[in-house]
Image (cartoon, rainbow, N blue to C red; front, side, top):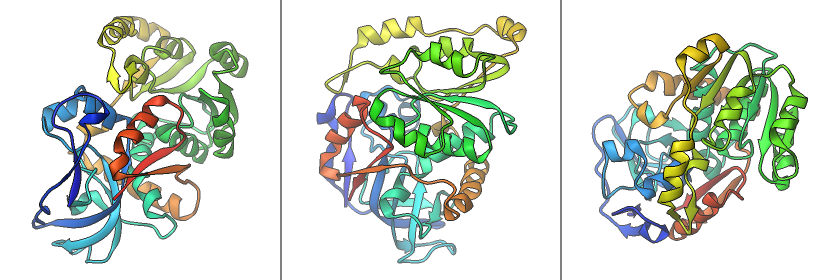
Length: 341
């Protein structure tokens, strides 16, 4: 079998496609021949050596990847049999042509999804579902702003918000991404490349937003908080703009400066503002399959009914994993990227 291995932190050259022996299938587990593995921004920070759960749970060497799709090769579970088309989640190790997973982290692939779409679904939609439905109370008609709305999690959030009958303002960084988020149901779209973000945001919602979902970090966190209405919730699940890159490597000086510039939120002020900040990282919640399983079971019927979809998928051969990372870092991609094995 083949898998991508990172032996030490660094640039794209650290992504090594290697030959390894096939993993053993243990009791209660399933061995899957992987067709596609999903790529997430977290995988890039794993490569840089700064993703906290990767350091805590795995160390070096490490194979990145949280999601995949494929066909069952061997099963020691009553839920699956050889030949079943499946997709699933994993705490790292997804960039591989074979994977062994516990049965509770695996799902039968809906016929409505291709293998590439199935590999692009779990991580972003579980993140979006957890953000919206497992952290806060939502009510129809709430006004929501979604940063990076054309990305994997962002496009998932737009769709789930519309399923919950929320009013969505989607923020994108390029004009080419506007049509995508409109097609997904966004009520308003702010194109940062041609409009002043916060001026337009206040025009759309003068009283402030009920929910703002922000994975940007230092670039927008402070203003996102300011543009909440009383009882508003700022939901933070990433810090992309805190991590400047140069050819696949971190500029450590800028990272330090951005760390110092990141807003700090005082509980005393938040109390009088009647605003809240909610943060999470799903990679530290793999022991909460009650939550992750609940999310998947709620969304699978939506998939089957066509109420939600994987917005756009770009495929890369496994040997081109470095190019995939470079493209994702660039901020020019739309939707999800996947590796083909």
